[in-house]
Amino acid sequence: MDAEVKPTYFGKDLEAMSFAVNHHNWIRDELRPYFGTEMAEVGAGVGSFSRLIAESGVTRLKAFEPSRNMFPLLAESMAVYPNVEAINAFFGEDSGRHRLAFDSIAYINVLEHIEKDAEELAHAHAALKSGGHLLIFVPALRFLYSRLDAELGHFRRYHKPGLSALVRAAGFTIEKMKYFDCAGVLPWYVAYVLLKRPMAGASVGLYDRLIIPAARALEKRVPPPFGKNLLLVAKKS
Image 1 (spheres, rainbow, N blue to C red):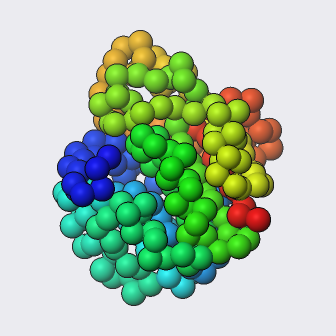
Image 2: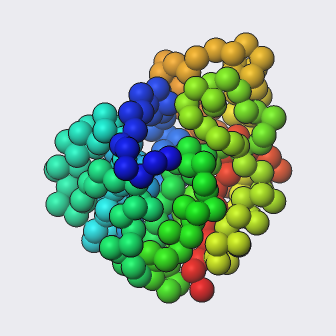
């Protein structure tokens, strides 16, 4: 994307995923041990995950959101957190001012929106302190790519080998990588690949209340061989 032009993002997935409270808490709890004290979140949207970070004990969070229509909502929701600075910019165009600034940088359902993902991770590597952590959560499995993915601006869905190679090529050492939400694969395939339905907050909320708690408990005991998403933690050596 052209760094000179702030995009307009309609955020249909952000609106629907605002109902996924258990899902977001699960992601946060998996990644929280790696937050550190100085953190950046790339593509913060309206701040649904930013709030969880802000309330997790970080000293400073810089929340980057380039979209001109999402940013005012982010700024408003973050105004109550003195440890958060909302920034209306692409992380890549602004990260040069933050060399060796962060203990961790998070991409939560964001990297799939970035066409030049390798270039983006190079910016992240440059902005992390030595020993800092890269935190990634992305949609997984290419056969699940649907019309909805395209409408939401997803350039891709990831598999373990591809994401691993991408992160290693950027200079990181992978500490943790796992498939996430195995139970969601079949519902996603039926609803969005076969039936081509739009995403709806009501269905997301129902799945979040009924399925996610059980899926979380099961995956804590038995790591799934596949899943609707991938979660990755990598370290800058």
